[in-house]
Image 1: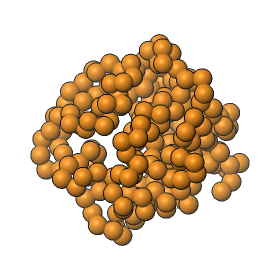
Image 2: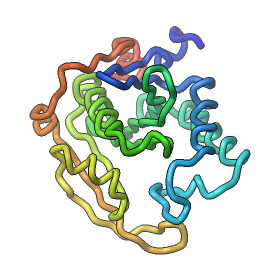
Image 3: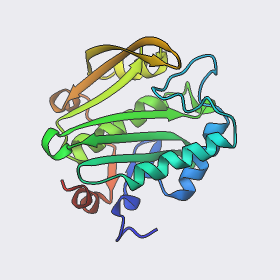
Image 4: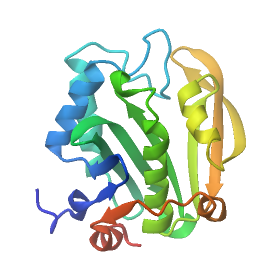
Amino acid sequence: MSTAIWPLFGLGVSGPRLSLRYLDDDLGAQLAELAAHGIHDPSTMPFSEPWTDVEPPELQRNSLRYFWRCRAETTTESWHLNMAVLEHGDVVGVCAVDAQQFGATRTATTGSWLGRRFQGRGLGREMRQMALHLVFAGLDGRCARTRAWHDNVASLGVTRSLPYTEDGITTEKRRDTDDTMLSFSMTRERWETVRCNDIDIRGLKAVREFLGI
């Protein structure tokens, strides 16, 4: 796909083990299949929207619809950067960076998931650090936010291993039940204390111009 027309297709972030690549249709299809093979124990729900509560092939179709919608709705005022997480070229999950009115707020939100068979290997922390590097070093952000349900041990473990501040507790619907959501934020100054020097970003100049930064 043309990076001249849609520069986000040229966006990539590389770390010691992992790389992030902005989703094209091929990566989106691979991720849809990965999701269908399982992300979490069906008895729980780690996401705000219970999108995994459907059976294949509707799960794959909904995944693609979501990726396409995020791409179509990305503007300078509201953007959704869904990136495939790759380990040695194999797709293992998704890492997303979203923002509203970033030019004014310089604040972005990160979220991610890994295929179930790739969990428990420390990949979550590395891909979070790569997303933060994109927000702060690449896009000149001032604040990064993330959220997780109170019992999402894996996500909270990554968040609490980094210098976030817990700054919100809300009650929200989880499937059909009220439950507790925790919110966290990290300032640029706090990120600087854990900044990694082994992360590279490609395609950044064109992406910044596309996003109006």
